[in-house]
Length: 589
Image (cartoon, rainbow, N blue to C red):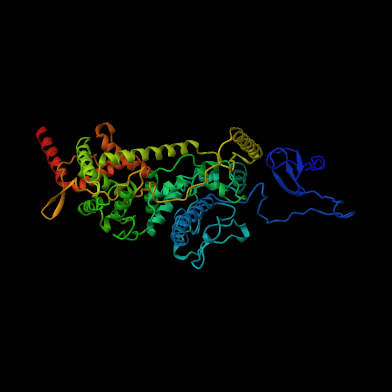
């Protein structure tokens, strides 16, 4: 670049009004103040390559396509489409069928674009410039097969031809009418996307605004529709382990999709996804899309409580014989019925089952039925099992709750410490720097280069170990094998010391039971019940904390689910408490 040769160009910069020009390698003028590149080019004479020959450097390119420094014209919905594409590809790598990406998620996203009036309608919300390039309405092939392209105006397709999906009303008002000049200005200065500012301000009633957390809600809706072997807690754990793009997903955008200014607030996420938040967003999106009843969750489906209970019993190293008891609880409470398990967004009370939380809650109820978990009976039964195992070493061992507690506590503490360390060491700064405006780009990139250089130097000085490769994903966080002397496997242990024969069936020796919740909150309350650890036994606290960590949920959420299972299982007890409360109210009057 030669500043002297650019002095003859005296026009003012359209961005900052300065008269300070330089020449790029292609021979184009650029502003040294704001780095704006013009379409004007300088006649260049190169006598080194071809002597005595005059060459003109002419850069043609597309009419609407900007240079790499400025990027392509793109809309916010195209950015979310990129993230959904990445997540769908990641799920495919995890073993999910390709139809989830090519059919289910494709159709859900297409329906959302239509419902939110961004595409597949006669009057999209984009007020000027080209239309957003979204998925093709062609069942013969899918745009998911390759990364979505960003097309210029003259090659952009019209989406009015979607037939029954198109909006019949041609008088739909646009929420934020913006003139071409103002939109061009905001797109170039305030955001990399054309509608970044407009999208940030858009607050139309009845429209569910797309966010990065809602991309996970879309993924889980698709998984649920396909009845895949991934629960919501598994999905969020895979995100946390880096197997599914979420944090800094914008790093994988095409180089031409420049992201700065308002785009930073839309696509940059600085917190881990929470179970309850994604669960609520999933129901919200399903209702917004007016989705029909989902495919039935039957007994042979992975999400059925009988199968999930078996999975989590193996996960937390509990005896296989407990599965018969969990199946009985599922049958008695009716939570294994198809109508109860199947998600129906258009129902009056649209809600879906928290399949993983429900299965874990059933196991907690079974543990209370067997051991009471009152900090007394479980230790008494452990003493009996310990004495029997010492005298009968050749026979099938009885399940020892105390020994299981010691093994699990050590394993969970180690796993939790590693999890906390990994979170503390997580680099929230993205490899692809974000900046507030195109003017700041050069400074931000220079600072980023300095930080990376300093990190490398520091790593060399402290002789740090190389980064450990990311482990392959697994549905199980704990692995237990028979014959491991360091960690006892309890899968094959029996419940003979806890159960007794009555006629031709087995019943628990323990005939007592305490309810996790005596009285539920009123219907208008946000929560069904409350959970105060100090009000419960230490054994119950350990069990709740164990499963809550396993699913990465709040302890109060699991306690609430346990209470709901108990409410179904002990209807008579709760009906008696209701009658007593009514009689007391009657006496007051």
